Length: 188
Image 1 (cartoon, rainbow, N blue to C red):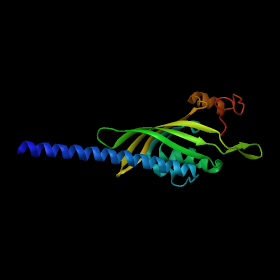
Image 2 (image 1 turned 90 degrees about the vertical axis):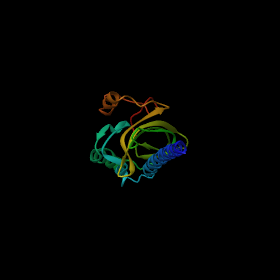
Image 3 (image 1 turned 30 degrees about the vertical axis):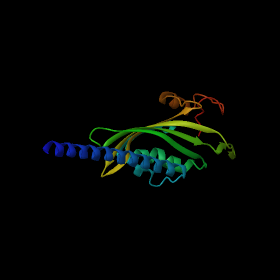
Image 4 (image 1 turned 180 degrees about the vertical axis):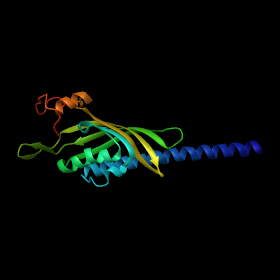
């Protein structure tokens, strides 16, 4: 009888562990989708609430930030002032691994942006159909029972690949000229 009770207790603990892992993965997916929804809606208020205080980001042309305050000052505030286009986003194909110990995780996602409006001199031009494909690579951490971004890396990978960080810096400094529609045009 003792063996049966021990086996049953072991099975219950295993099931509890598996259930917790599934709940954590779903919580991370939900958090990341809510972040993307705010981005798509251009709802910049509260975007930083998805990040830990010590978060590190490397998001395309925005460069590397360290800490939530730096992220707000150098990314979200800039986006709030400059981005008004009505683009659509699709976040898919999550691969999420909960690390041993259960309070950190790693995830990769595929992102698609369906561009509706292009910035032109004198305003915007509305075009239907263009798209971009990107990749998120994120580390998540549970803080006070809530999953948050601890680290976020994001780049566009198709149809043109974002340049490496040192190439971005040179292009932003104006040392290269780019043709709209050419490879890795840095203009938003």
